[in-house]
Length: 313
Figure 1 (cartoon, rainbow, N blue to C red):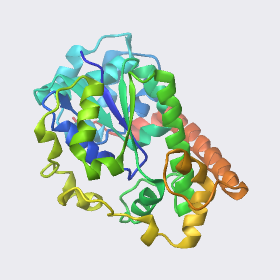
Figure 2: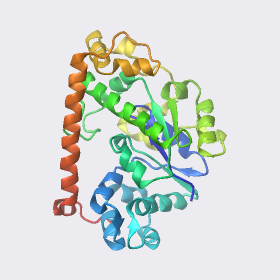
Figure 3: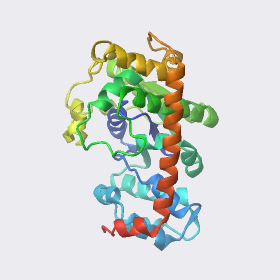
Figure 4: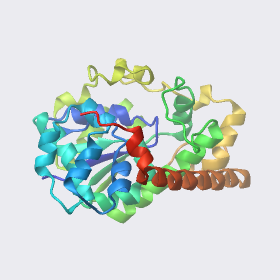
């Protein structure tokens, strides 16, 4: 089985667009955001009991929405199978149902779980999509109410989003250094909207895929029907979000106070640098995130999770 191809990127960085374009390839199936990898890993830790694992899979709304035949998943499972391999069977069946030999994933939430991804999928390849964090902040903070799942660490201001962007982009770049250039590729959102074919050819060469002209067509994926993905209805367009004209000066200063040095390191135009106040905000964000992850782990391991998630299939 070819290695999975995992798209990394902070929320509102264009990862849905990239998913749609890559999913057009006849050899690669990348479903909508999964959300369940850390959940299943927390519940089953290292190795699975096949029937217990499948019982949890029956409770996952996303797997139900994907239409994955669970009898085919069960046929691939065995007791004492490593948890990463068991999770991979869900994606394998999803891909095969669509006549494709390889699977991928695009779930921005997993930017907080990169060590877990390394452990579960030791041969995975990663495409890290980076977007100017100030444009991503404008997009994120304009999301309609109820779209984003709100946790303790959910950003509610430009400065808080800067903490997310700095933390996750830096973590993904460290992740790339650990796995090596043969398994990690950085691309820019700004390059995709100005010339998608060139970027897609780079990704295909990196991933061992044949480039197909259909990959530049993103319309008709179904993702554009969602309220927060309306830009997918348009041709690829530069400047849909532009911090130079859409971000007030005080918010620009707040973002760059947290993440200005990383913006500059990535080659983005900046007016300010990371400062003491920004570093304090960043430290507070990391404390909140750590508390949330600890509480989430305890909840998933408890009987309460099972009671709140009845079988769907």
